[in-house]
Image (cartoon, rainbow, N blue to C red; front, side, top):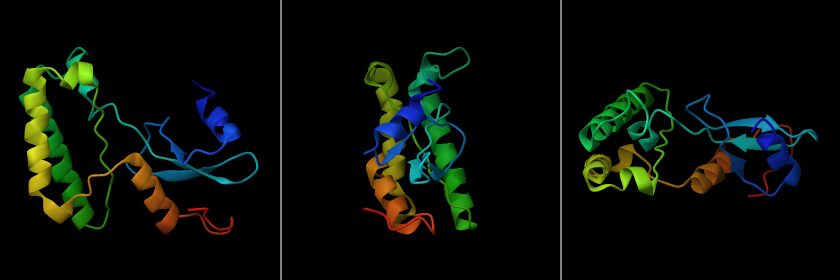
Length: 144
């Protein structure tokens, strides 16, 4: 909805919103009062909704391969000085089907094999990290 961000910022009390698809990293915007508001972008490409769309994933192996290739590339970008965030959109009615769940299991095993090269976490923890390490200068102190 075109009003979602405005309503979220007006209501207040939210660490972030994810009503954006336009970046690979969180970023700040401002409320009308000039206060920082964190955006943690969502994704449609690394998302099991592609099982339900034409030209999307037809089976779990395609999903797993795509996610592993994407993560491998992002890790390499990070090693070259340009780290990114990878979100994976999951819905129980889609990836929860046995043949698709196998692909997710393969991806998660791959992620686990990477050890400290990846941080598997929640959006809330990403937001807390962003508030602590990337809070905008000149707008007061973070409340976290």
